[in-house]
Length: 276
Image (cartoon, rainbow, N blue to C red; front, side, top):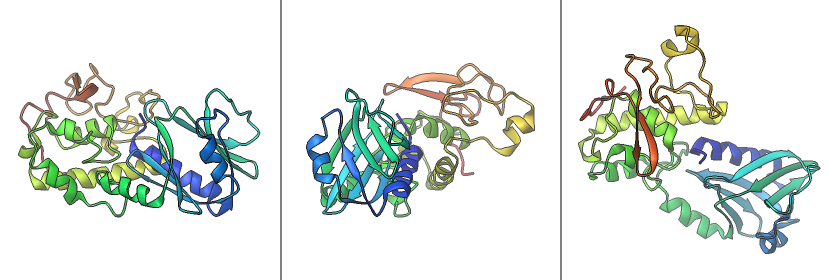
C-alpha cells in the first residue's frame, strides 16, 4: 500500500495537469459511470491529500474521494493510451494528458462537506501544514499499545506506513514493542519532526531515504540498496542483513499482520529511545 508521500505527489500532479480546466471524465469499466457523467465537462478545481486519502475537487461541490488500498494505481501520461474497459475505473483527460485510475479500494463521489468530515476524522498528517501533533500525542501517551502499532494507526499518524514506521523507530532507538504510555514527550516531538522532514523529502524525491550522510553507500563503500521501493533505509526489508550502525543482523517479526523490522542491539527490549 502506498505511503502518504506517494498520495501527496499524486494530488500535486493532478492539480498541475488539470486544475482550473474543463476536463473529460469517463469510467470505461463502468463502476464509476454515473458519477463520471456528472463530472465530465466541468472544471477540476484541484486535488488534495490527507494520509492515504486523495480528494479531487470539481466545480459544483463535487469531490472524488479515492483510496488506493493494496493494489490501486494511478497512471499519468498521454490520453491516446487505449482505455481498458476491464480495469480502468476512472480516466480524467484534457489536451493530450490523462490520469488513469485502476484497482482502488474505493472511488466515490462525495460533497465538500463529506470530504471535510473525512479529513477531520483522520489522524494528523505530517505532510499537511494544518496538522496538529497534539492530537497524536493525546492518543499515544495514554495507550498501552505498542508504539510500532500506534505509528501504523491512520487515526493517529495519517500517511505513515510500514517503511516510515520502521525507520523512524530505528532513528530514535525505540523498541517497537514499547507501550505508547512509556514514550516521553521530548522523544515523541522529535519523532514527529523527523516524520515531517523525511516524508517531505519523499514527496520531493519520489523515494524514501532515511540514512544519514555517514551511512550512505558513497560514504561507506557498500553497494547501493536494490529494492522496488527505492531509497536507502536502515532496517526496512533488511531482515538478516547487518545493521548499518552496529552490524547486528536486522530482525523481523509480524505485528498486526504486517512485517516489522528493527535492530535488536540499537533498539533493545524496553528501549524508550531518545530525541534526535
